Image 1 (cartoon, rainbow, N blue to C red):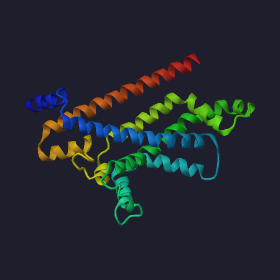
Image 2: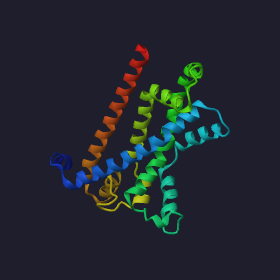
Image 3: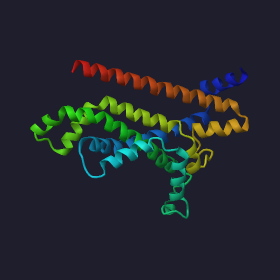
Image 4: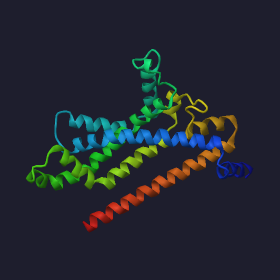
Length: 232
């Protein structure tokens, strides 16, 4: 109970170190989610709308990468960004930028695959109408993405949920450096091993609250999407 009490004190008093860790975690995960979504939503729509050579391979690869072990992604990015790697000259290893890169890699296949699943039924429904009005590719994609916006928003939230809870990959590429690359999940692992359970528990509580918020927001979006489909 003393540990719980001290954890709540850190949260209620807005401890500076606690807030810095939470802020960096949100910055890294939100940035990675935004970049991955900007790339994956159009890509998922293209794969869902048009048939072309290699389409099935892309779908299979994206679906498989949804279960990509984070430590493997972290190792790949580490090899790319290390001094002896092809991108070592950029000096990105052990920086928040490296953490954003690895989280983007983890989120991208999730958003792509779920966007495709959301677009497919609408493509079948709107196919002849869009052909009848001779809509160009940009209008075609925009129309279907807008109509599938509730399902796509849920896909984006799923990607953010994976990013904010990630620990293995960001430790490898970020190094868990205090004040530089230390985020919530890596701090929880470190502080627990050191026996500093108060800070670890405070961050764990915040992480759970974020997860509950994401889950509630996902359910709200699904509910709105269902109501929209019924009233359309």
